[in-house]
Length: 197
Image 1 (cartoon, rainbow, N blue to C red):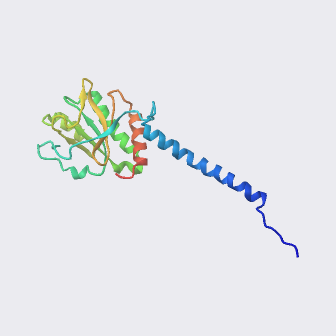
Image 2: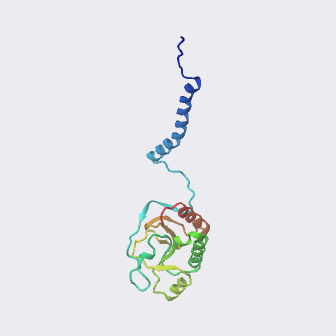
């Protein structure tokens, strides 16, 4: 009676290194990403057109007032993305153009346009002509903010655009000469990948 010894086939012996290779290839991107995160690496260029506020700046939940001086009901702004135009002084031609661009940006979001509110922060609520200009825009919120509510809200160029996330954080600011297409692209990316708002 002959005894038969069972030995591993060559195919079984070769499968372990192959498995280790596959596992290491799958783990490598995670290890690289974790390493870059922990050393604090940042890309030199990003795809956004505005200045990213890092870390995001929480804005006060209260302090905004309506045109008649009463506190603004922030419930209508809560949980929404805000495209905010802020500044001081008269709303001249470039400001009126910005108001029109803000409306076109919101409409361009199509099915997501309800996730965005347009807000104007100004010190000109006592000017009837200014208020009449703002009132020509549908669904536009006009408010007055206390001093330093929004840092760097205006410069010599007048009114500037900002993006505020649904949690009330200032996340992006724009220079005075930003094209509406750049703001639109940033908002589309933010809203597309946002879990809230």
